[in-house]
Image 1 (cartoon, chains in turn blue, orange):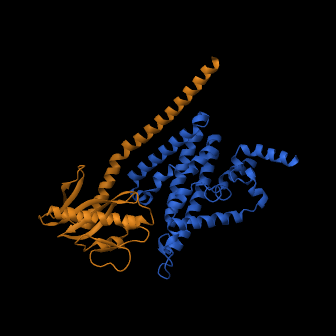
Image 2 (cartoon, rainbow over the protein chains, first blue to last red; image 1 turned 90 degrees about the horizontal axis):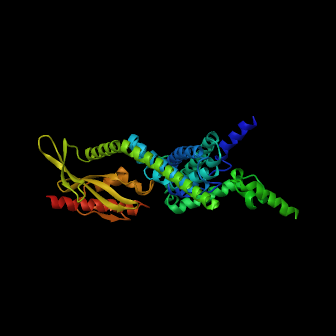
Image 3 (cartoon, helix red, strand yellow; image 1 turned 90 degrees about the vertical axis):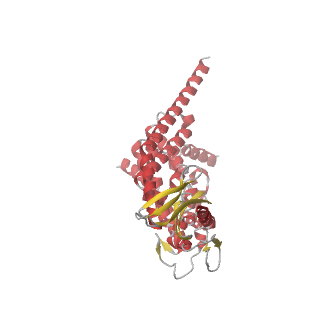
Length: 233
Length: 187
């Protein structure tokens, strides 16, 4: 039962508690660049989730063979290769999807959510937990991007998923679709997610304990001991 | 001595592993490319044919002019009975993220419509709005070098810009200007 709970928490962690965009502040470049509409946010999220799962599974399978010193180049090559293969396949078999995702696909290769999950999770864990972690993180990423895109599209274009809502009633605030609006809404969402964090302020702001990634971090336990010793002294 | 040997072993092993990973990934990418290249080219051809059909309906499209690189640039649209319905000219303008390729349909010196053939580098939601039918419709009826305006009501041979997408819009305007020049040289 306990094991089941562990796996479940690996899966759900990425959705809320360690949401890659709003809590870990990872993958911000695509999160700001492509969320000009709700549909774009959803498309980028789904495409990223697929590549994230594929590349972390590959890295997890190789985890015992990868020499520590060259692990980063190995991640880069694996992720970039995976992205390119997926791009070719989509171009060949789903031209409509390709027209909609166009620029998002090459962007995935440089998305740091993928590197973070490879480095923090996939390279140290078996394949099954890795799939759960990638799926959870992917869903969290997709949810955050869709939310960001929905708000920006609603305020900036007066529509939602390309369905006009207020576009004819009031002039939409165009700046919300432009880069400044992206930063503005992103900042508000991060502030909101911090506000919803139930942990006391002291626990959040001090060092390692405040890090949203502490669960997977190997330095966390030692840091906690050091901190406890410092308090004693 | 022993230490040095071990170090060499670890360096060589690491290099070999990295090389192996790179080789496997390269093979995978190359394999997918070889396997899909024909299909991708075929898809692009179908899309291009569909664009040409939407601009000027005709029975046959013949290439009458190639660009410096040997790619088709001007197509002549003819019916089976030999009547020429117009010309389709493929030109490009520098957009926000690379060249925006535009196909302009021209009949008797007047633009009948434009189709965006490739705008992969433009931002979705902003620059990519040049694909919207309402924007492209502005080019129908243009018979002289089109002018870009940012405010006011667009008159004859004037194109109203899209807010937040000036660079992409300008790329289309440049491409259409170019197409009109090519057309003038042709006739």
